[in-house]
Image (cartoon, rainbow, N blue to C red; front, side, top):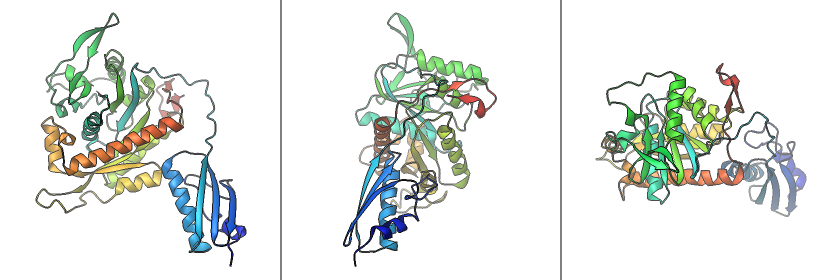
Length: 379
């Protein structure tokens, strides 16, 4: 018995595209259905170019037809993307880009202690090993740790002349350029600054520095969602954001808020994905064993729930901590499982950055009109 178009449409009325309230038929996602004997061709039109959304839509269509119409049907799904034009907002101001820097990636976490700086450091050295020109801006004003992780805590940036202007020369190690407030304070000195003073210091690190040509600048943000985050997004056009979390529910609740901050309409920074750190514990003497101390795949499930890419996981391994404390990031080690894990993670970040740049216009910095809260942040 031949499959009919009516049967297919009836089945597809039971599913929708992620994030869309209506079913595929009523929302206009289904453009055409062609049936011939046991063969079915379904044409879809999506408004988002996100690869994970397209894959999920294709899988849902095939699964639904097999379950509700004919499990032996040969199903072909064709997807066309037509993103709606983004309206121009008269209050939107262009970000102040740094000449020579191609991509600015914010690495954030809703909660402290999840390994955000460790991930940033290893992501940076892996990008450098891949041949990219990389810099790190340590924007964690009150707890800078990047200088320790790069074994440059006692270094001081020199002044260089660039086009007749005096600029700070970033400290460089392992092929990565670094600037941090930690270079200008004593190890036992607490930074007790109000928001405006911290923002001013960050602007100096950003714009009064001779960064040179960079393919990627990684910004290690402080935990949470606060004044420093707004200052950074006000100062720079952020290409995309990466959110780091551990699998435990307490960290996931804050990571969800971190994603929501970047996705807020008045901020609108693309979220490249979520990274799960301390995903499982593998003891050195039992390298094949995995112990899920903080829960299993919590960040991966959160990424699925929020419809953002899952970039990968990093295990809880003693050598990662030791390497960071010694100022020699674990990703620098060769031919190890950790090197492979950070390479997979970094490749996913690069792929999502390329996909974002191909499908979306450049990010523009936000304009802060008052400090009365998030409702006062406007484009």
